[in-house]
Image 1 (spheres, rainbow over the protein chains, first blue to last red):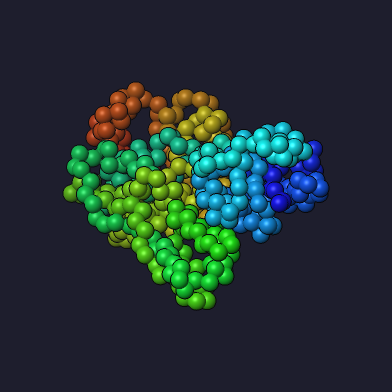
Image 2 (tube, rainbow over the protein chains, first blue to last red):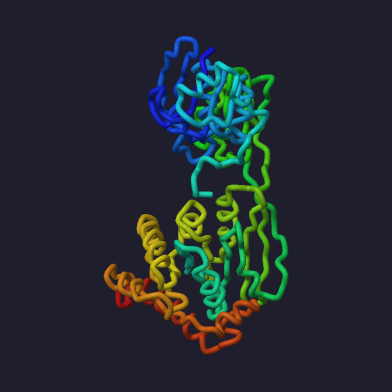
Length: 124
Length: 282
């Protein structure tokens, strides 16, 4: 099963981007082989609805889980609809997070853990 | 004539200028376009009365007929619709009511239903009507209410629009279609910074504009210098006066407590009238 990780860079040593809908990149990683594909997040600059749009984009990549810092209500609803598991509270490098994921040490989100627009910096 | 009172920075005195100008003119009406926080009515004794509800058409989907082709989700510029696997999700608070999804749907599964955003209310005095829009709490999107309340403008009168602060969609909507825009600022570095942002927007809109400095005497002279350098008309300076602040804190228009100011506010209108007629100094 492939997992998508919100990332600040395009390689496994990059740090996790704590935002979901407005993260800079998604790394789509196969935890078994550590092969990965980088995906620039087209939703980062959306005026609204970044979460659901990002969820659609990674759903089309066929991932089974998302690893990120925080997830808002609309993104949660969209990921849940896609049957994608959501692991939150991630921080550190992408490689570390994959290791934690494999060891079952990541926290699975039962709902949104932040409000709408939390990834929009000081604007709201 | 339609005059919008706007500002980049909040709390500069838009409402003070709008209310006192409207009350200083013979045949004016006042429209408060700050639908998130209308406050012109605080300066009038009569309570506001509801005129009508305002809503936007939002889609309702017949999910039995829908084949999840996703064309509506691709079309929606506001990401209000998502189609993920076999599920269609609609995020009502993101919908701007444009109706595009209904047009684009090949299977005609969308009907439109009214989503209420807020109300229009009426108040003011016998001589000077005030309308305002009031956005429901929790709604993120006030532009349709601003559009609706602006439609109540009586073209035979001088209509003063009190705009929301800032330079985003609500402020642009409140300034659009006016004959003149007054930008209210305070003479501080912060005031000047946000004035420049507002000037950029008004230039894009293409409406003639001038500046009123409120709380003159505080800060520095950089706003004056900026206006001179950019050849922006400085229409008036309202001084930083404790008596004005006292009246304001009691909800009394300046010209009711200090009638000598009536000429100042009527004078702003006269200057604008001259500028628009091409007889002005600028």
